[in-house]
Length: 503
Image (tube, rainbow, N blue to C red; front, top):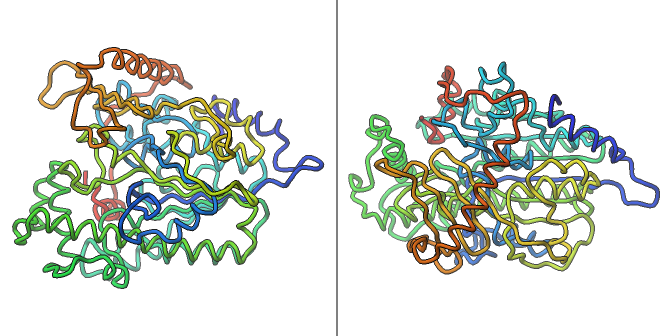
């Protein structure tokens, strides 16, 4: 843990007395953080989805609290997950291109030497580092290649499982390039439980990242059959091939798109394709949910449940042709299906009565909340987020505003309004401001900027203040964020391409 932010955070941790409980106080809680890649907020049963996709998460929500208006920091893993773990917003202000060196969104924190490499700066202090310095055993289980050790995301984890032997074995024998794209939830949960059975010091910070709701959507048959539309004429693999045709065309990778037939070439209407695709996505969610139930039971059996803080959330959402696109991207200006994420929190102990919290909350608020419950609230002083503990415990908080900084867009979003600055409009030209009443128009079809100039002025002022704060957080000096990416080895390219990250 190094340089500017480390000098801010670590003294606060040490001043808090590590994890030694004060006389008469409860011991620090175990912390279980679960992130599910590309999980939409509206696909869970308790959120109103008409099919039984999430009985285990429904039960968790009934034991704790569910945030119904939680927003990510970015519609992509590389910037979103460091934001979650650091409590800081990613910044793409002044960045000209999304490259392997700029894609994580924290370039301004890098030293000149670090700007020449890919991955996160050592300056960015992560939640695992803070908890580890305070005496936690830190265990990470990662399944996303964008979060592997080459990106420096593992900072602070004493143990970091990446399932490479499993992936190498599966991919050496798979009959199709879309198969075996990531370790499935059953493999991950089994590995977590085996590790816990080997013993550990208390308290524990356990993080696991599941990829099942990320494309390709190829759930086990017992779950696919629960949701597959009657009379489906194509196999699940064929549907995914057509999904990747659309995905690669969307990315501009036309040669890659030609490897797979389009839905129309398969003889499917867009409606038939969308129905089967969404069924597969729902089945993947149900599979992950089922395995999370097995994890929860395992934690209970190992006395790691009642007094633990458990948080389940996502890195970002997913588009399933809501606006004509697939997967996650920046093409629609951060539409709600891409930025709204589930967030379910079970506080330590008996906790409050189960309820849904409708106030807007942000991804940057999760790390401060965890630190607050761990008795380390002072360590969150330099973070952009705030602890949500008052809301969890039924106390009021001032309304929050969420912000997004991307290469093409700047967004400010409160409980009602969504202001979008199109820095680089399609086809060029001057920047464009748009305004949407999200409460009344969640699909963002009616631009109200001309009718509510006073709201535009207010939201613009909030966004520009956010940008000023981003630009002020420079560590050793601003680094170039526009350099070309480095060489991708064959193994990494294979992993990324199987997940639709060809570019």
